[in-house]
Image (cartoon, rainbow, N blue to C red):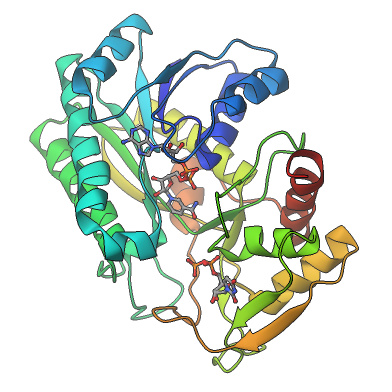
Length: 333
Ligand code: NAD
Ligand code: UDP
């Protein structure tokens, strides 16, 4: 199938591109490079030994998107393009609504103009907000706690309305938990600019000596060891989940919300210990106060993904840490 990946040079999209291309799909990548680099494309071509078309552009450019859809005979879209920093979304909500919500409207207009109706959307567990119960299932109330989460919920609701308006639409909103890890080649992975906000890339930079020590945000939570717990999912599992969603939409119309996680929470300390084992390096750390807005713990029920997509995550926390260290030492020196 000919599949367009918006935000195609980004972290999750690039891994998904590999999985799709290696399964015989033709992927076309579209990205404005606001949070990625063009050099990713050459690495994708090296991994897959295939030519991967790349178009530099903004998803808010409806005309350009429409042209790409026509020229590349696109049959389905995976919409990764978006901004993803919670803190930045609090500081500049207009930027987030313009990019994430307006960007999706533009994409839908381009799709509609071309009679294209198969869409996988990168949503997030952040749509759930403060847990009323755990693990979150897809029926949990949706109360995002910041503008970033609001943009994801607004897009989900818009896509729901669109699919109610016309039964031809096929939409899967994939609610990712905490994607980490890298492709086994070590050629692609998560490469945030500046000092990372997220735990895994921060730990990797401490292990490699680029940052002096990790600050652990609180060890007095009501969790197994007092540190925060998250449902970390290997990006290669996530990538395979997208391919399963594309296959699912071949056979099913309507709107579907599906958690993509492992169903297993891991604490900050477990991840740090796992990374020390994977890297053979000590991770200097100190306990500091809780990070404002952090939830103590959240994780997914994964039954829906298993039932609808026939997909479940396979890779362990150790494999996540090993793949990040491999990427760190091969590509980030
Ligand atoms: P990423 O920043 O690596 O990838 C997003 C890509 O979209 C970047 O390459 C960026 O340049 C591009 N982009 C942004 N705005 C664009 C625009 N207007 N037009 C064209 N391209 C644009 O992030 P990622 O971690 O790969 O995330 C991909 C998607 O998954 C995002 O929508 C994000 O919100 C969502 N998501 C990510 C996580 C996570 O923890 N990584 C969790 C849940 C959901
Ligand atoms: N965390 C930490 N130090 C850091 C970054 C994160 O202790 O430098 C903790 C954070 O408090 C949370 C967990 O690691 O309990 C995962 O944080 P991340 O930002 O990666 O994911 P999110 O909180 O957005 O789910």
